Amino acid sequence: MNSIISHKTLPVVAIVGRPNVGKSTLFNRLSRQNKALTFDFPGVTRDNIYVQVAYPETKFILVDTGGLIVQQEQELEQEVSEQVKQAVNEADLILFVVDAKDGLLPQDKELALFLRQAGKPVLLVVNKVDGYEQEDVLSADFHQLGFPLVAVSAAHGYNLRVLKENLVKNLPFLTQTDQQKETALKLSVLGRPNVGKSSLVNLMFGDKKQIVSSIPGTTRDCVDLVVEFQGKKYVLIDTPGVRRKSNIDTKLEQFSVHRALKTVRRSDVVFLVIDAVEGVCHQDKKLISFLQKEYVPFIVVVNKIDLLSKEELKMLRDNVFYELRFCNYVPVVFTSTLTQKGIDKLIPLAETLWDRLNIRVPTSELNKLLREVQHQRQHPMVKGKRIKFYYVTQTDMCPPEFVFFVNVPMSIKPAYKKFLENKIRELFDLTMVPIKIYFRARS
Image 1 (spheres, helix red, strand yellow):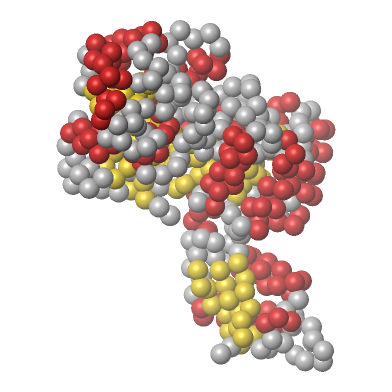
Image 2 (tube, one colour):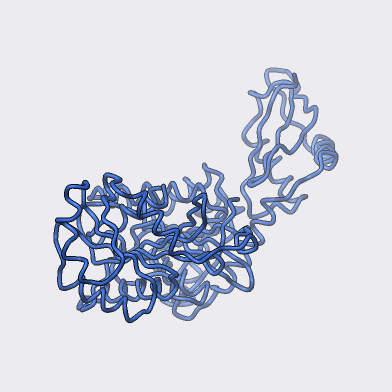
């Protein structure tokens, strides 16, 4: 599990600006990783994206924000603006990004006024300046905003070294104690569009960190949020909704889905959210199968149960457990973001799941189990030959991995493998977690 530093400890640098000025490209350059989606049309980034950045001189939290539109009309734009205002309030330094090729627009002047009123240090980043010869011409108008100015090209890397030097100079000094790392559980939320993932995130931690909208597919980025809950730090990743392949009709959404599935591989625990009204659909089964094959620890969250009658809820429960019969170890929680039923169970359950993923079973206990199992039920003979089990040991955790040394590894029947897995779960409190079991020849 990776370490993370809370943004309450490290200084925060927020990147703000109107839509399509290159904020996400700059974010990727400064953070040296492709966390923010970058496409050539406005409004791609909607949620704030948090990432920890470490330079030789300092460490800080970098925040990419949605395009800020001061005079909002649409509901989603209002929500994005609230996210940006939250980032500005948290920030120790603001990188105000403008587009050199568009020139100084009225929206830039309105944003500059908003940032001056916020009273935070601002560094004006004039983007899309491709070289020294263009610098004076393209950035001349922006001096009237009255902020310290650096002309860069985020796409081509021009002058980024100067920007980084100015950024570091404007950050508060960090003591050694400030930079102490804390471990944090990495949780991600996966599911089809519009099943209530973002609403669930907001309720779990009691703080509106994610955009909630009735428009399917609002969350496009895999958004890392560092949050604190009951004295513990968590890294929360709210992934884009994953649609069926036949319904993915834009390159942006294809990229988002790929990122969502990639994200779950680096999560400690995944919440898979299912719509109670629709039940376990074909795409849900695909996601469950993907998580199982990847040995990802996950919790099934059946959301929107407030929309069902008692009889419908009973039928839903039966259906969910039937569909999960091939991975019946997975815990299931029935929730409603409207009534908040079941929401308080999710974080404690994820903690319990993580604790069990980290269980280390002594080899002596495993081999005692092996002797008892062999006495209780031996593997059937294969071509008249007895399968001999020599010993077993645990070779890894997260998830727990066990290796059985036998005389003919390739002849082990799947049913017997499942039998051994169930015995290990039962005796060593490894319910709820995926388990890896391998059979090897004794050298």
